[in-house]
Length: 255
Image 1: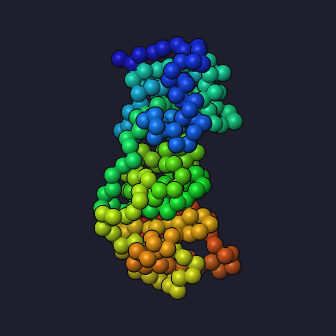
Image 2: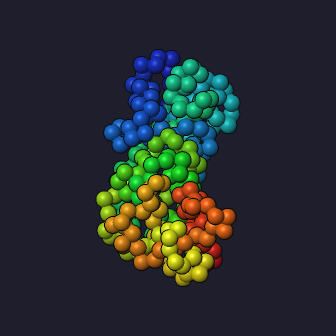
Image 3: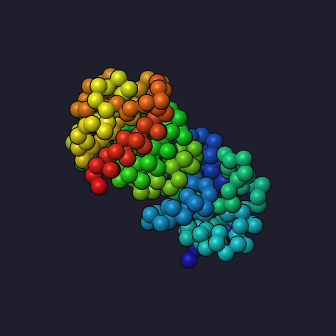
């Protein structure tokens, strides 16, 4: 049975940890916990078979059946005043509910899963958007090369819109050793356009740093480099837009 606790002190040990998780993008690696804020992400976790050790819910939300039912799926429920919930949020207006989830670690690579490789992407919004596209287009694994924005940070979680819970996530990778897939990269300098090329399946698309692109070492490992035609004349695309196009084209060919 779910245990329900009324919390009124900001010095509660769990709330202290959650403030660290909300304020430091990489704190989950030290604390071994992830703070998931908002009913959409909480519901997405449960729909994918995930579990929450704690739910934190405002007093007002606890009196509403839909939030009470959602919170009661966690092992323990902490009911808090609105002011304490505000201190846990990185949003202008805090969500009425959040879950605490155990972090499963940096992840292990699956050698043949359709993959997106993130090579030192810095922007959390881009990273989360790419995760969401990967889930939508049938790519089941995302490998983040060391230097990429923290995959389980609050901003990446919000941009991912629940995609995290259906993907195999590997972060802090030093190399792609063990990945037994053809590597593909997009480059505005490539001779062949993406719609003209044979696209293998499964494959791994490599998406590079927003300013520097794919590193030379990784580019040398790619079996194919393709150009996304831009008849409007822009120099380059945002990396999350380019990733979505590449993944869609792979998905379209497969179907």
